[in-house]
Image (cartoon, rainbow, N blue to C red; front, side, top):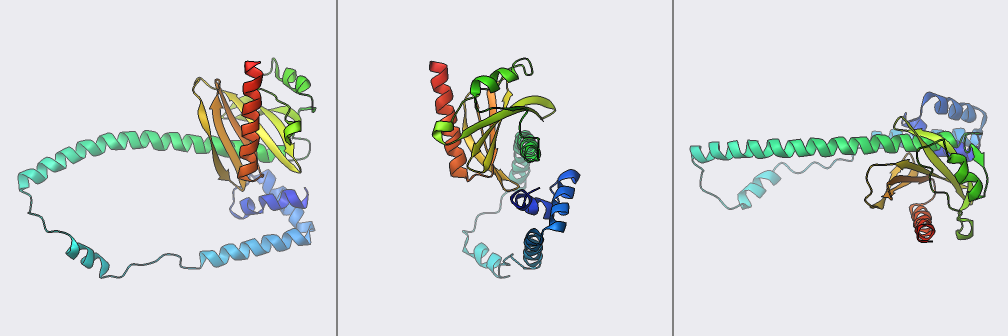
Length: 253
């Protein structure tokens, strides 16, 4: 493991977010690298200082009284009105809670998949794990996926646009095999994960950050896409825009 790879994972190590294998690799590197050991110690000290600092502001005790005094006084409701309002409120709350639970479950599922995508990206950065097929030729990479997946991922050469095709591999997200197309921007690796979906609607790209990596997710033509990298969000968005433009041109052609 190099210093650059280790430093990408120091925050995750401190927060206990690495699996046992990655944690051992980072700890083994830190044990033999004075610079990374010093960086790890500095980050741990910063976390300790922040944990011991009171960042919560307590409002003055009289604030509530002043707010209540400034509100207009209303007539006291009758007991019947109170009971009727309570019954209606309970019904509305029950309906709202049902919808809220569904939303929370969907969000939890999306976060779980995002976590798996980022973990797969981390695994790929280990020596020998980045590609199953190593080639800058899209006509070599794309046929390699045929027969290994129900739908082969689109493979587009973006070298002229500043994003070099490196190759591809099979990976596993949400307990199923999916394709990962690998690109490089300078020294930064971009993993483009592609999975088939039952939805044909277009979903606009959105960006989230996890463990120091940016992940840009979108959906198109019955496929879900996740582009993951330590690139800045603006450059990752540029990659997605160029990929989408090129894919649209290939389809129309």
